[in-house]
Image (cartoon, rainbow over all chains, first blue to last red; front, side, top):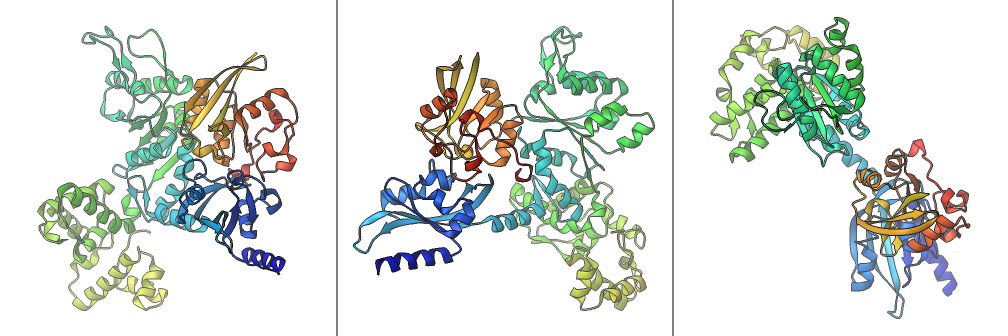
Length: 452
Length: 132
């Protein structure tokens, strides 16, 4: 009968999807179910008789062992989050619960640990969070999601990165995100705008100088390369540098050393370089305006940030982000923008990109004393610009339309498009019409949308 | 010949999981004999530990379970990695230096344990691209 009970228990244990193992008082594994074999990649034969930490290999084992606490305190612990290293050398996220193993007579035989593979949940959670955020950047556009998805590998690689994008697209934010995700995250991130400084000043800022190097150099001054030692240096507007400076920078990249002005010894440059430009360096190279060898040196990994007009679906998300940030900074509790403001914002071409949108919201924030930002809170220039461009490239012809029925239908379509991130198929479903009908109406009503 | 061998430690044992190890024991070995040992607190979850290992002049790292990512970062820094081992630190060092075949209980279960060389020195980590 006892044999039958043991077999039945094993069958039950093997039929459940959670991993289960039991240990004795010497921390040796006494039973190991099928799911435990599957999650850890270790067979029952190999597991039984071994110390639990050699088999389970969780980050909890050393300091926060839930089983140890259960054995010591006699208490159960439920759903502790951790990870294990499986036989395939992969980290597997798990949740574990522990309790005492007690026989029919109430005698404690050891402990039992039940654990669940949370890989799928973790992957979904990562996908959801990665969709919208990376460092201080938020986006739900496909182009940006692609960039977000490769960023961890880019960061880990320590290779030089070239970020290309128009002014205000968030090049420095991206550089910071790369730094924060990299192995250099505990060391400084130093940014310098190369285009803002004349050659000599740029060199002294970057490489530093020694006392006596020039008239007012009374003492040594470390440059950005020294200050960023071990960290990351962000060279913004690299396309605006002179050929002479490009030669010096190339030498630093090749030799990993630099020489302060007036110095006689070279210093080690243990920095990762992230360069950015709002120009096409490739084109500049073809026109002999930028050194080809330097271009190849810095263009190890290149990331192209799309302008905001090419990802207008991000406008509502960015607006929410800015409002929430400003609420915290200014102690206000503005809830958002009204539909008219959103419509105006979605119709703007944003030559200044995200920075321009941020400035618009900040302007409105100052004037707004209500829960929602209204059109009257927006900068006057914005309204004028939109009216001025009505019917042009950004699909705002409806702003000046005099037929109320037509205007209402245009508004209805535009609202549906906005709600659905300008995905026309989804917008059509939202409106309860076929996609081809929506396309026809867009054409008939003269709605000119962004090229997307 | 001088070399430095580091082990991630948990008391007098090798730490079960590299990434959660709290301390590193570094042995200075001259002509096959350990002449000095030092213990350093460490946070192995940060991959910058590699820099610490390089600064300390460590050539060989012996550790418990380790993820492919951490293992790749360590081996790409030209440090010989002997992972998925378990047991007493002194015994493991002795086994490493002596060239005597290691008993099976020195290796953690799984991870191709049966195919691993019996001499601890030869049980070096080899990267599996798919796992990285």
